[in-house]
Length: 480
RNA sequence: GCCGAGGUGGCAGAAUGGUUAAUGCGACAGACUGCAGAUCUGUUUCCUGGGGGUUCGAUUCCCUCCCUCGGCUCCA
Image (tube, rainbow, N blue to C red; front, side):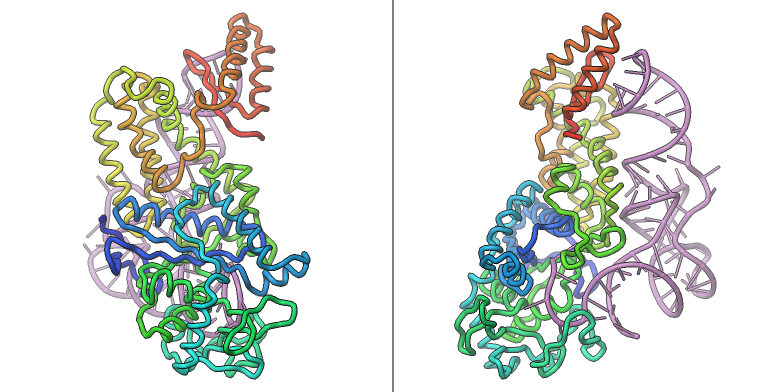
């Protein structure tokens, strides 16, 4: 197992990752509430933790990655009422679409997506324990609240002092509570809304308790790593800590807390409630998963990232195309001619350099998942291969495989280069070759009008033609 | 008001108590090309929010102020 450091937002320092039971790592990430399509802010968070899981697995850790699904909450119920559908069915529908989007984005590292409503026995049990131990109380209508005053550590994670909060700043204060900072564990049923039987009467669980009920069963009372976006640190994560630690007596709930920075849209938080969202699915349609992942990973995962719809992805598109150029060429040669294609060895010590670069990439990423610095190293490698100026074609298959190693690393860990690209392997490649042959004949007889017409038509179809000294090559740039 | 995260070139964004502050985008010039694009080469010397302090040396550590964003009880 490689030595890995993690910035822990609870202690506010970068710490050596020491799993409770090596090499296992329990990773829990707060997922979304599937009441609307995912936006690119969600995409950032889930790509970040996808890389965390991929990297840890590569380094020998056995990661069990749980991402919960809040398939029942106020907004979901409200949306379902608007549409006149069953809330749980609405959640199922949006979750199915979310899964497809994640698959396209290359997020395949999650082991288990538990649904809140599948953990009703655990939720009821945890609420019951909190009542028995005196950390919770029942309100007149049957709701159950956590009494924050009984848990002195409340606020330690987010460094909030209860007395300094401004109740009602954003959400109406619930008058049934003893104190404004108390939070609901069990909500008494509202007619017409989904409800479950409980010892305190029919109702449904509060948001926070769903998470600790799930992690209690799936990961135990203490686990290694809790991740989410920073906006959830208060009150959600604070409540998780209070519930779980009060109920189990086991401290701390999570050994490490990783909080991803928010994606801002033109300087403002992107969120479904404000309505300033860029849909994730449509963005993938437009630029492809690799460009979007590069955009996300091109910044420190903790920094706020300001998305500019007019330039951010254009810039990443250019950068991605440049980054992958030698990778595509190598892949094309290997796909077409195989690993035993003849040729020279890599010049100088380039083959060894590829191997040592992979070591450096691992070492760099292992310092709090520094994806940005890793990408800078990959650009350096792209530059070195580009300086071979056509020399890639002269190198034998075995050598090419060695030179591709840093890109293979990027594919495995960062999830880049995962879309089909090698022109030869593309469906329709033969047709393009025929068109290019016709264009070559036109050029050789000086008929540039015909030559340009063919080029323009190919471009309209998403095929970029590149004229090189010997022959013309082409690549897909996607439909305009 | 309180808490938290940020402030680095034209733009996006790394890193570090120490030679010319990475990388990418953009721009400009050259090579190549029938032209364009792509590609390659070079240039982009005056860039670390303001003010103090510690230090031989601060962008980095400390203090203070300013600005932006987030949270303040069911937001990724």
